[in-house]
Amino acid sequence: MKEIREYYDPKDKANKVDRDLGVPQKRIRFFSIQPGATYDLMSDLDFGGRGKHADMGNAHPKANFFLDIRSQDIKINEAFGFQFLFHTASTVFDRQSYSVPNPKANSSDSSSSSGSSSSSSGTRENSKNSVTSDLGTRMNVDYNYIIPTFYWGNPDVDGFRAGFGVGFANIRMSGNVDFRDPADSYAKLLLPYTNRPVFLESLTNYQLASGLVDLHSGDPVFNYLLLNLSQANNLELMGLYLASKGTPFSTDLLSLIVYSQFKNEYTPLEMLALAALSRTNVNMRAKQVFAYMVYLETPTFGFVKFRFSLHGPIFKDSGYTVSMTTLELAAMVPIDF
Image 1 (tube, rainbow, N blue to C red):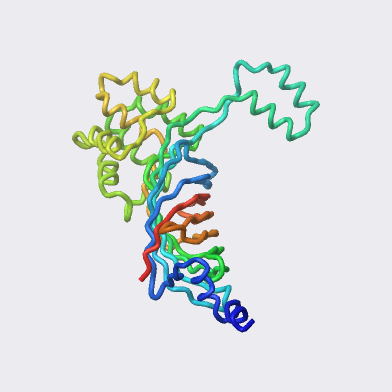
Image 2: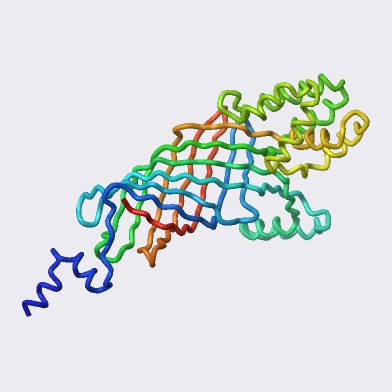
């Protein structure tokens, strides 16, 4: 009986786990470096403001690499505590779609169904009577968080841990977005009919007026070419640079029709640059903005630990509210010091 009491003594839980598993539980003495890879189950980037709105997602989810650095646990009691988390990663948003009426849909059927159906069934009917088109935009996002996280879970018991925290993030975005603004479409029809220098200077002003081009801390190469678009062969260099950054040149039909009329004035590469610049280009960096993270971690299996998390930054810049929401599954390798 004495041996049994000693074996299950709650003051000796760590030794009990060691005996059960045969492997001592490692502790973070100073900090832990945790490189890993994530798979996005859901990823969304939302722009709203100035009477405009755009929502982007990930059409082709793939593994993204990240790096976490964690402080040692600062315990409140045996089950609760907090630690500091530094998280750095990058992701790509390559899907932005919009819906238009389906010309093949029977208008009489849709009108009768809308009159007799509930709001939820009307939504289903509307989805059947619309066509979704990909706008071909792309956004590259690099981000890092510094978040104090509160956790629940005792590693001496089962190794699971749940936590949440809020902190600060540094974000860098580069790419393009389409707000589907009728005024923008009207400008595309009129601007090219002016002379080349006036048109290119107007296109530069159009991009700067969006408020999403950061001239202070954004991409210096893009900013230089944009500000000097009408000089020398900078328009052609802009096309080369955007291509090297992975910017998609698929654009809306309206831009292609308008710019194709000026094939004698612009080279094919310049026309591709114009097509890309017909969208609202984003080249911005935001520092120390709000970020959050909620997560659930598993014990270490061999040398790998898994994490299920929901996180993202939310901030305002140049009249826009920008929010990124990511639901992901991560695998990481803890290296404790």
